[in-house]
Image 1 (cartoon, one colour):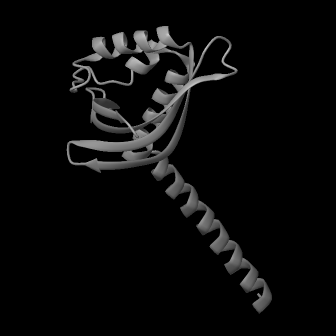
Image 2 (image 1 turned 90 degrees about the horizontal axis):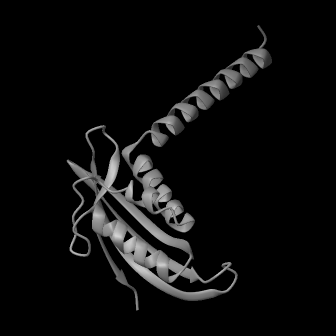
Length: 154
């Protein structure tokens, strides 16, 4: 085998090894707790924008509690009031951090909520919020929101 051919084989082997390592690393990242939590939060935000109250409530742990809503039933009631006032919302997340800890996880987000009336062409109102979330796994091992605190950013 010539030097040139040997170099090509070595380069090819390195490329294949790099692709395999990259694919494995990407799959491991997608399966990480952080990725699962980010997916849950994205799904919850999408359901909120769709006005899917049941879909939003499904993001909350059965043992959910916070100072602003005592349980999932109160979250549902809050969402009913929110969607009675405006028919459509848009969320724009500006930052998000996720920290996985022993026995749970925490996430922080900042986002702008824009509410629309009628057909949703003209914004009716806009507020910025800072949200802190704690998450826990349910019996099936899925991450769900177990506590939340939000405040309007001034």
